[in-house]
Image (cartoon, rainbow, N blue to C red; front, side, top):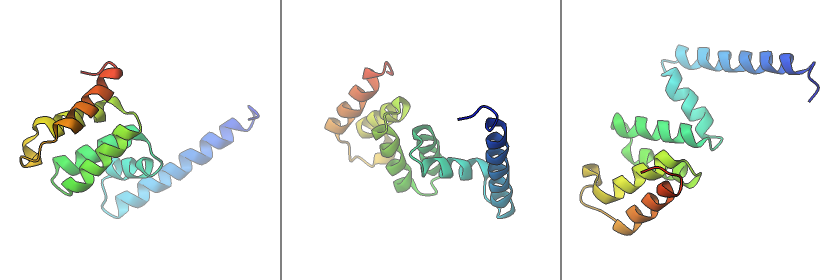
Length: 116
């Protein structure tokens, strides 16, 4: 890309993001959650992880939270993979439906990235 056009692109993107945040704030949405949602729609693994944590932490939609964690893990995000290993291994919210094969699978994925 031509270096002369880069500042114009940065300004355009900044205005779009600013407009997006104003819109979600006006509708009473949490701007941070709205931003994670937007980025997760583009398979941004860290945002999928953060949004998944939000849904699990607030008990808003735990099923959606786990779905997002799995997507994040499948997209190679180590912290999500480690969380999923723990979830399938011993998480009390799993209501006793432990799956040790899944736990081992996700722990191994995380360990391959140096996350224990």
